[in-house]
Image 1: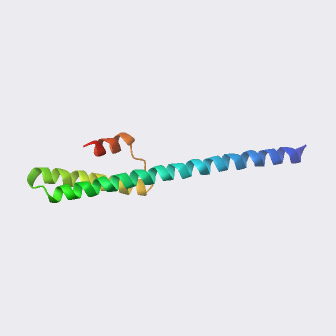
Image 2 (image 1 turned 135 degrees about the vertical axis):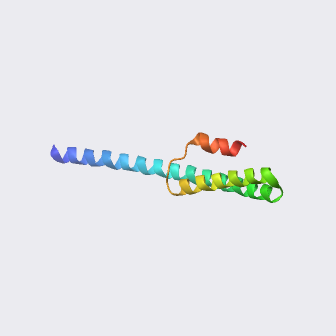
Image 3 (image 1 turned 30 degrees about the vertical axis):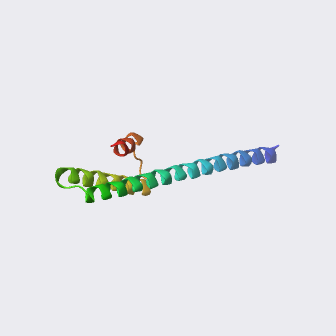
Length: 91
């Protein structure tokens, strides 16, 4: 009976590991999609800042810097609040 328990335990462990890997892969794809979206928005802000002067230009540059900081945090595997992402993309 012990070999059966060992086999069962091993099968359960393998299933759990497979499910965990699939979840990690899905999270990695979501993170990469967010990074791509943020990079596109940062590029849009750069272009808009080139065509703007004064205070509004500085605001665009500051928002771009915040986006780039957020991109770096995501690339480093740090947690970024989804509301923070939404607030920067919504403006």
